[in-house]
Image 1 (cartoon, rainbow, N blue to C red):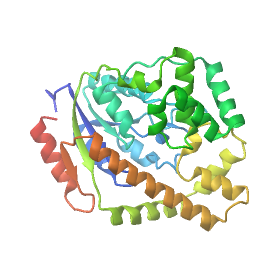
Image 2: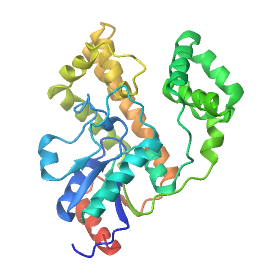
Image 3: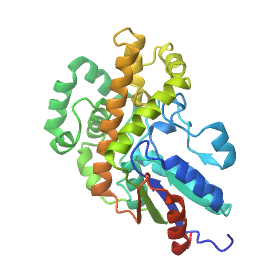
Image 4: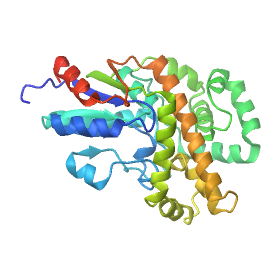
Length: 311
């Protein structure tokens, strides 16, 4: 594969449980590739089963990077992930390999491909105070206060999304400028061309697959994995605890839900997330190739397309 263009990056994206990892792995095996994680929750280190991170066997077959590299307590922003991913792409290209971004965090991918405004980091004490305010004021009052300063960002956020409300408030406190105004600024896009492969399954197929995957996780040790974190009595504000299934299993361990109830709620929340992902991809990502994971021959179709793209 000598002479491969150094300015091209393969992107394998789509909703959760659509088969992204398997396709990225197969492409990496055939193209001397490294799979670079583009899923926010898979970046954290404590839930490899729950977040469906690559297995030890899969990592032995091809290089994988940015999986399980952060503790649950750390905040991962789109801008921080962009910097981490850009460094990995440059490293892979420098070694003569193919960089394959794989994941469903659409905002992160867009931030890398299109650029984002350079929002300053807020001091740690402001973040702590904002989290304390959320706890003391309650979500509704905190949201109302933020709306006085940044109504645009509040309109975009789900009411219970503490992490993003706190982030918006700390940016206002640190800079005197609304987060929405920062986001409207132009950022510098990455210096590569991206070939976007989008897995777009039929909804019924994906719903069934999400259920099967959750059950497989239960069979393969996810209860022990999550219980280990639960027993540490982590701070509920830790960003990595938002992994789908973790809140429900925590409630099960506290005796608030039966395992059957936790399972069903976890599946339902994952399905809702997948639906939001597909809506986002339809409006925010222009794919170069759309693949139906139900159809045999997707790997061949992807390979043919990449050959024609010079990757």
